Length: 400
Ligand SMILES: Cc1cc2nc3c(=O)[nH]c(=O)nc-3n(C[C@H](O)[C@H](O)[C@H](O)COP(=O)(O)OP(=O)(O)OC[C@H]3O[C@@H](n4cnc5c(N)ncnc54)[C@H](O)[C@@H]3O)c2cc1C
Image (tube, helix red, strand yellow):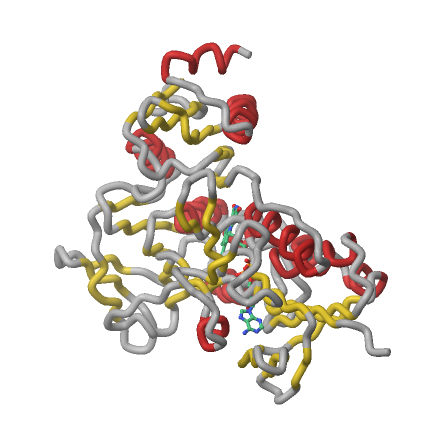
């Protein structure tokens, strides 16, 4: 009798968790993990942090060693999946192989959004998504050289801090009026602008990039203001495009991500999805949310594996995130979208630790905690339990 087969497409945080959880949940059939990168699944967050700063190796990044996959009879295949045939329940890879499946997990994540402007394809223009992207940046990075980072989001700012640790000159160009504008309150943005300037980074806001110039390679970044920033390399961190093409071609419902329900099932009962490629209708927020974070990829992957095993494990964890820059650990609990009020505890204009609490309609919905792990733990616990905290009750929450 042939054993049932689970095929997992995409070998990173979500895919690695799905295969591990399949075995934990008691899947006795074959497990095949197919990814198009050349190494075993590795942790992506350190790429812009310790790994870029030269403080860790690829071996340190690997999520689980090869012995784990051998021990649990998980076949790891390096290939690109090019098509899903839902009728025959099979997938096809770029090298022409066909794998039938009984259950399929899509964990294809996303790719770096590219800069579509003159000079965007010149040598010396880098992106930061994969281990090989960072290898190329590390080859080009050396003390005294000038790196220009396009995008003042978390990845851009973490990259700036890591390159300062390598004694590079660093400029950050942010098109909006403040860094992190899309994701934090002004107090948090201004805090990070100050910290980076104090560390020697040139932070330019309202800086719209129009072109990158250079004959053979990038030599200058041209702004809409006409200003020109001379540079040795450019690193672009302007967001992520979810890899949903396979799902869309197979006719699955896609809405900024492969749409999944509370147990990670897609619009096809035999296919689950998890991680950066997935859009989940979160009851907590009553809308489709596509998160880009390791905790969320892990949570969804556990539910995806349970679903393939015929069990129900609902995706319910509160979204949370972190960012490391210099000596600062930012921990974020909840989603602040739609906030209409903030309360700041601490002195972000001068200090190096504070918490920023976000409210909507008088109710606490999220918090950014910088070097305040106790605040983070309290808020995460409170929001996870859906406890209602009004602005006036914040002090007593913090005192508990
Ligand atoms: C520089 C950087 C720093 C980050 N820092 C943090 C942080 O501090 N905290 C945090 O929570 N999150 C952080 N993130 C985000 C986090 O890494 C992602 O949320 C996480 O990697 C998502 O995992 P995933 O498995 O869903 O997708 P991905 O990590 O994108 O992996 C998807 C994999 O699928 C492969 N793939 C895609 N299509 C195919 C195909 N057709 N066939 C075969 N393989 C395919 C891809 O090559 C890739 O290996 C960071 C990300 C980056 C890039």
